Image 1 (cartoon, helix red, strand yellow):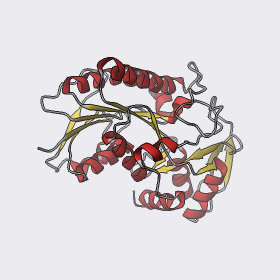
Image 2 (tube, rainbow, N blue to C red; image 1 turned 60 degrees about the vertical axis):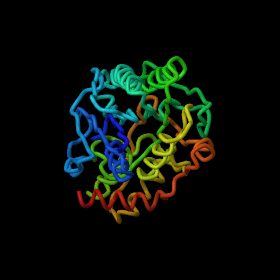
Image 3 (cartoon, rainbow, N blue to C red; image 1 turned 180 degrees about the vertical axis):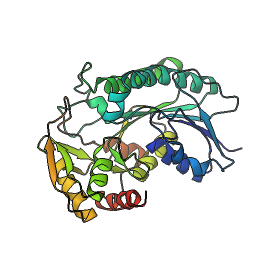
Image 4 (cartoon, rainbow, N blue to C red; image 1 turned 120 degrees about the vertical axis):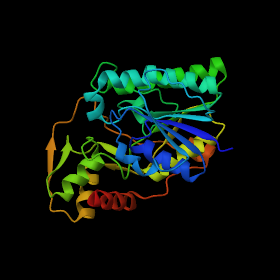
Length: 310
């Protein structure tokens, strides 16, 4: 009998890639989404697959599934600063109530539970690069606090279920990820820069562009999620690309790869915007035998082509 994976947020950017990947691996996939920030077009071609089931549901409300579920992967949440500024209460609720409900479902089904956490739990870090042992530097009442604290709570309750109920839980701390099926207006650097460059419009860089980021191509991330899902690891694991660059360098790279005539404009840095963001992936390399394979240039070429076609 095929094993079944439930993916919350399965119509989102990463969630939809995960659904495809798991179907290709021979799993049955139950995709749960309420389309707050996900998109039905991301999973439209999957609906003809007999191993794919879609459930329209808000996971902040309890969910009952009549069949056996072997893995619960909790990816439901607004994930970009634009999204969680637009949906602050929903972001907090899906991190708290949504995680509680999905842990409850996993407990009833005796499932492995995997939480999609984030590098944002580190806040504006004072340690660089960020290892899993770093506790973070987060402003709980700042504009990013709704997302940061929702994920920090989600990690805490996940570990509590592991410790108290003996559940097999996983926590993936996901760093900046990009690829096809990103929304062009979600406010993140890659879709913003690429759509601006393709339209020959000025690329918007906040601050002086000296803040650093690292960008992981989505196929690499999904492979890491899969390895973590099947592993015996219960503590948090960073998943991201340690190849770091400044936002200004990244903007110039996008202009070059798109052969765009765009210039760069500068705007004030948002409140609490992290000055650095780069994962220490020593643990992922050691415990999961995982590290990214797709270079930033190759990944950007793929995503630029996707945006051109779409």
